[in-house]
Each structure stands twice: as structure tokens, then as C-alpha cells.
Length: 94
Image 1: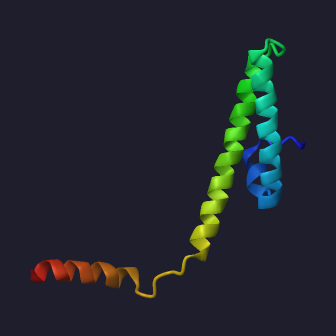
Image 2 (image 1 turned 45 degrees about the vertical axis):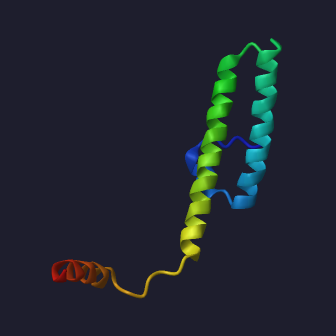
Image 3 (image 1 turned 180 degrees about the horizontal axis):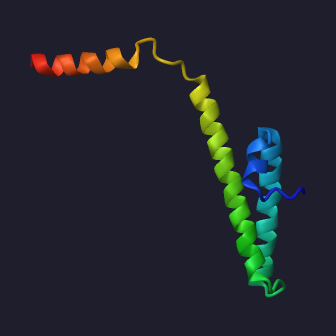
């Protein structure tokens, strides 16, 4: 597994690569958690660091997924200024 601790490196990754890294990181976190519970692993700070890295990866995954979804939604054909003007005009007529 490549070291991908920097946020910039995570942002530069493609979705399939990021998905592979997330799976690998999830397995590592689970192994560390089990090791700490069974008293085989004494470095609990390592578990915290790896959990944090895993959370950063999942956050970046969510950000990229949301960006893809926003890109697939068709933009409105009505300009924003016309939308707000129509709303304010309808409120004044009531």
C-alpha cells in the first residue's frame, strides 16, 4: 500500500485507486483494532493515526462522489436573477 497521508495526494487519486486504498486501509484499521483488543498491539496511537487516515480517505471519496453527482445534474435554463425576480413579484401581488 502506498503512503497517502497527504490530502493533496488523496485529491489527485482516481476513484478506482481511492476505492482500493480505502479497502486496504479498512482492513489495516480492523487488524490494528483487533490487535489492541487482544493486547498484541501496544501502540494505540498507531490505531488512532490509521483511523484518522481512513476517515480522510472516506471524506475524500464522499467529496468526489458528490462532485460527480453535481456534474451529472442538468443546470437550470432559467437564470438565477429571473428566478429571484419571479419569487419577489409573486409575493408582492398576494
